[in-house]
Structures are given as structure tokens and as C-alpha cells.
Image 1 (cartoon, helix red, strand yellow):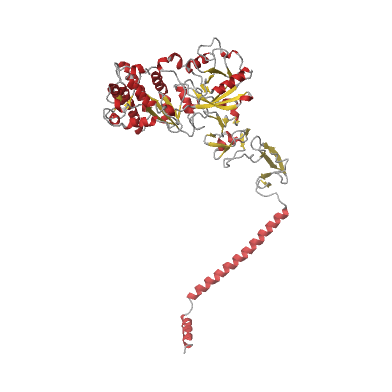
Image 2: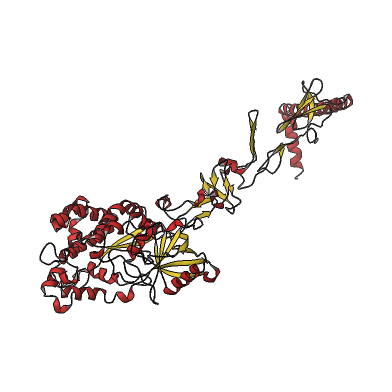
Length: 624
């Protein structure tokens, strides 16, 4: 920002915005572990640089080298720094602070083969954030090409590493970003502090390019509920004593309450700062209305389309152009206009007032003082504003095993399951594994395959359990087919375990062996039976003209008579004869009794009436 062109009022406004912020700026850190030599073994803090690509969610191990010349790396190195063997490990270059920008040091080291840079501070002080240079000194030809991570270390640690290297010790260091961002649950909340201004140089260009590149991934994550995204816009206020000045009127709306710098840094041409504030407000209102209708992801379409259709250089940075973009996206224009309100009123705007309040840091986040700024799970992102770098940081914010598929692509992370199956259980025959790739590494967890859950420790053992378990790899049990007949040791009505079927013996998992019922005399033991063993069963036959009954283990004649003694037959015949005779006698008795009763009934109908009268008279006499 060129204060000479902005003038005194701009300087005052900028200080009002940032005066309270500087003391609350949070330096984002990661862990540095020295693994050798023994004298330096410990864990140290280091500050993440605001450029390059920090390996969020991961680690990087390397060997340290301190160059013999060009130790501040302000010039390109004459040859590769990797000329000396480093045991196959990546090369970390230790550099001194001073004389040139941090980004130039990183660029020169990267070109010479460094995998990361460690910048040793030149004074005893708390760690600071290494940032990109100011706009007038920024060079887009290399800033966006820095891909290695960087870390600022304390002066004392830098001196200790140099001393060890001078003694001939190999210094091995592990940079660890696994806890650089919180990862509490299955959803990541992130904010993007940006600006609608497209004439602010390299940073504005990087913001626009980032939105275009990241839009697709951002919308997929948002639509599927993996993330909750909120855009934000920085403004500041004009001192009350200057609200009627020309400078405040050109840079502020709502009587100096919300201001932005002049886009061209020249009051005499182009658009004014207040135009930027109004467009920022319109973008914030667009998000508010789209979010209320359940489509917050449309913000990415609006910002992308506005930058293409309404650029400042074409004099289309207007409300009319913005309205056309809004209409094309089907969002309620009337509600957006109501949200924007009267920008000339001497009153607060609820949206911009909330934005100013949100700028002030809470908890671990710190104040937002740099544009652009990305905040992920309430921590400020440090690094290159590029699709892959930012996506990597967002993916590190998911609880392990809850990350979406986009976080498991080869461009974002390494699949640890490809190396020796991650040390987890695997059934190569069925192509089933307990290794589950995650963004941060891998977990050994028995899988669910075709609705069948496997149970076990995930490392040495996993076993199918529950209904339909035999449908998947036969439940991990023995199975064999021979001569068109299949036998299995898996039983569907069992939740787990394997048991050899009848006719076999074994563990049911690795093997089941045929039982020789003939030799073990467990079947076909009747008199006259001939036993022949078969795979999984046996065959039993009888001598002569007899048939074998398996369920009774006996032989019978083909005409239905049993192979028994004649004595036993005669006993049966005699028994039947006695039973028949007794039955006949009983039958004759029952017939005779019935006939007698019937004859008496008939005779009674034809008896003389005199007899009946006599009986009645005799009865009367008895009463006299």
C-alpha cells in the first residue's frame, strides 16, 4: 500500500483498522522434532511461513544442511545443494534471516533442491510469521511457484544446529503438521476473508484465480455437508473528525462507518474505495440470501461470474452488472437490495457491522489483518493460496476416517495401504482387507463387505459375522467341491465360527478331512452289511436279496419282510391268532346282547292290555 498516494486520511484509517489487531495477531506454529544427534533430541516450536505449501495433516523428515556460502540465500545457488549424500532423506536447508525477503530465500533454496527451509532468527524474540513481501516488491513470476514448506526457528535452536553440523554430526529433523489444525469431527468449518477489488495487484489476482480453481471442490464439499463455508470482508472506519472530508467520502459508506482503500491508490481516476465496500457488501448479502434458501455454494458462482463479467478495467464494476449476474443465478434480487440497504444513511449496516465484529479474534484464531486470509476450524491457514494446498489443509481438519473421497486422491495424500497393506489383516484370495486409507495415514479396521460385518482386531484377524456371512468369501470357512458336490463349513444361522459338515472333521477354517465311517465303525455295522467309504459319506449294501435302511442301520427283504428267525415269525402268527379268536368271541357276545334287547322291545308292543290294567289295579289296592 503506497501511503504517499493515499494521503494522511488513509494512513489514519489503516491504523484504526490495524492498531488493535497487531497485538492480537496469532502466529501459527507446528512441531519440530530433532531426532539426532543425541545432544539436540527434543521437540521445538517453529512458525509456519505464509507462503509455500505446509504439509497440513502430515509430517516430513529430512537431514539438515547449512550452506558454506550464500547462507542467507539472497542469491541463487551455483549448484545443487543435494550434491552431498543425505542418506536418501529429503534435504532441509538452514538459512539465516536478513538482507532479503523470506520468499526469495525459499525460492532460491527450492531451485537448489531443498525440500524445506528452516530460517534461523537473528535476534532473541518470540517467533513471528514469515509473510510475503509488500505489493510493490512482489514478483508473481516466483511467488506462486514456491511449493516447499518453510519454518522460522529461534536463534538459539539455529545456533545449536550449526554447532552440531560444525562438529560433523548429522542433524535429522521431523517437521510435524498433524496438529497444526484442529480435527474434532466429521465437518470442517472454514472462512475466506477476501475482497471484490480486482485492481490491487498480485494478491487480488491470486484471490480471483483461487476462487475459480477451488469453486468445484468447494461446492461439492458444501452440497454434501462435509463443510460449512462463510465468506468475510474486511472494512475499517473513518475517524469522526474526518467523516465529511473528501477522502472519507470517497472511501467510505454510511458516513464513514465502513471504508476500503482506493483500488488504483489514486483518487483522481477509476473507482473509489466506497465502490469496493458496496460490492463487498453485495457479495456478503448474496451469500446471506443464498444461505437462507439452502444454497450457500452459489456464492462461488457469483464471485467467479462477477470477476469475469464485471471487471474494473472494462468499467463494468457496477450495480447494474452485478444485478445481471444475480438474476442469472436465480437468487432473489429484491432481498439482496434490502440487505444492502441505504449506503448513504447515517446508520449502521447490520451485515458490515457484524463483519467488523468478526474481524476481532476469539479464542485461538486471532484478529484478521491480512488479505486474503483463510480460517479453518478457527485457525488461520498459512501457506500458498492454491487449490491443492488449501484442500490439503481442509482435509486435515476432518476427524480421521470421516474425510470425503476427494481427500483421499493421490494428489492430496499418500495411500499407506499400498505398502505391505499397511500392516493390517488381508484375505488375498477374496481381496478383502482391514486397511483403511485416511488423510492422516491409515487405520486397521475390520471391514463391512456387501452388508456383512467382519469382526476382529484388524491386524491379525477379521472374521465375517451375522446373517448372510456365508455369502462373502464363505464366511472365511473351508469349502470344497468334488465330483459335482460341494461341502461347506460355514453355517448361515450362526453369527460366527466355522464347523465341518457331517462326514468331515477338522478346524473348519483351513481344512476339513473326510471321515472314513467304515474304518472307524461309526456306520453300516448291521449283520450282513458291506461298508464302502466315499468322500463326505459312505455306501452300505446287504448280502443276498436284501435292502439297507440307513436310518435304522439294518437290512430288509425286498418284499418287505425282515431278515428274522422263523421262531419269531411263529410267535407273531400265534399272537395274531389268539388276538383274532378273542376278538371274534367278544364280537359274538355283543351281537347276542343286541339281538335280545331288540326282541324284548318288539314283544312289549304286542302284550295283552289286561295285563297292563291288572298291574294298575294292583297298584291302587295297595293304597287302600
